[in-house]
Image (cartoon, rainbow, N blue to C red; front, side):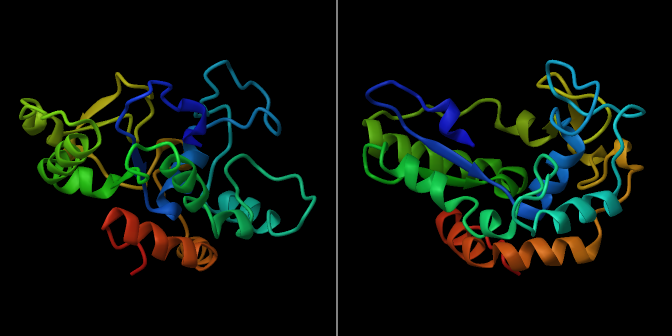
Amino acid sequence: MLEHFVLRAPRSARLYVVRDLPDLMWASYNFWCDGTNELLCEREQWAKQGVHYRSPEHFDAVLQAARFPGTKTFLNAKAPETMSTFYRGSLHFHDALATSGTVLTLANEEMAANVTAVWSKISTYVGKELGVALAPHGGLEEFAGVRVNAGGGEKGAKKVSEAGNFKKGVYPISGNREVLKETVEYIKESWAEDCKYTSERSGWNYCT
C-alpha cells in the first residue's frame, strides 16, 4: 500500500485516495502481472493482452481460492480477512504521521465526479496542516475532462483518454467484459465493516 511512498519531509500534508474495493481489485487483476504465478512478467509488471489470461470467471475463481489459508493465491486476490480491514490499517498508519493526527481521505469517485470540490477539500486541509494558502488550480477544468491510466490497452501516466470515451470496469485483456455480479457481492460482503469506515472517512458512500 502507500506505506512504501511515505513522504519524509518534517512538515507535509498527507492525502490518501481510496476507491471502491470491488472496482479496485478487478482493475488491479486486469492491470498487473503476477510474477509469482505467471511467466513473462517484465520489469514494469503489467499484464499483457495475448500473453496473460484474464477473465471474470478466472478472477472469481482465484478469489474463492484465497478463502483457504495456505492456498497459493493470485496477485491482488485478497483473503476475506484482508478485505475486512483493507483501508483501515493504512489510514491509521498515515494518521499517526499527519500534523493534525488525521490524513485527508479522498474518494477516487469524487475526483471523477467533482474535481473542484476535491480541490477545495485539499486547499482547506493544506491550510490547516501547513498554514499555507493554495492558489486556485488553473488546470481543474482540463483535468475533469480526461482519465489517466484508466482502461484500454495502453498503460502508464502518458495513457490519457477523454472522459466521455471512458467506460468504467471493462478492459481489453479480459474481453471488455464486466466483473461478475456474484464476485462484486462476495467482495462487498467481505469488505462490509471496512466499507463503512472508508465511507465515513472519505465522505463517499461505498456501501450501497
